Image (tube, rainbow, N blue to C red; front, side):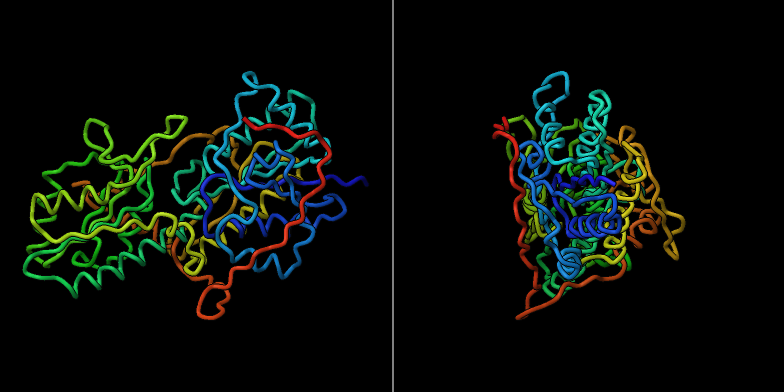
Length: 419
């Protein structure tokens, strides 16, 4: 039987467990050695395919893959690059399929979020139009947890565990330093339009007096008067107040509380909402104020990976290979919850066209009536996703994250300038 190759790449913001999915893809493909030649990984996502910048994962040993599965970041490099619509840039797709043909690629697996699922859908449709034999499967991930069609997104559980841990530990510091002057602490977490990570910090609290005392979500318009009244009441009772802020919180008119800049494509760069809220508290109420932005730390914390999240990432990677080799084109392995406690789940295929570029936001039943905290329903949903720990190896007091030798595949085509 003639063997063909499988293409795998990582896209978007990386996570603490995206490499766990990668390791499972490679392991599962090797179990079909009679059908799959090798897994070719694109460097920096779809850019690796367009630029014919590929690595052969055959050099990774079983031990390497075990280490890879516990290493955060994106071992093959990621990107934020969207393919143009085929009708607008047919040359882009000419190049893509020329690379696939040159390297006998018959399966395309793309590991990313909402936009990446659109890429899978585009490539699948264009392969059909061209008559090129290619099976395209999405592999889900995003710390934002905003991917439709799945109960949760691999990457979210570990980021949620990290921010909840940070809030609990900061809360102990705050309680120790509470004073008659009053003190406020604000943690700003990722969440452009969906407040899942902010909501997860509420898991740090075991009763109403433990931080965070307020959670500000993009799903709820920011009401300054209601917010400040709650801060004042909390400080009066406890001497301090801890607040979580999603970076994308907005005023009632839809304007962002804070934005940094716009990139070349006009996309808004967020950041600074936490500082803005902390300064507002100081200006209006006179309390001492501090703020923190975990930023990359919340998605890169491989030392605090959720066992549930790790299992999700491994499962969707393996399922993606199973779907691809079964010829199930244009699907994504999604997680379906069967029960909260004990937590039970399965993986099922959903069409990528049905989830591409959609954004799942925190539902109203997860948000308290005053808009300043989560409900018990939300807590029941979130709790299983952060449970258990998967720790890396430690050397000299630090996590031992390896660097892998990834030999480049010889180019067979002329260079291509990516605009």
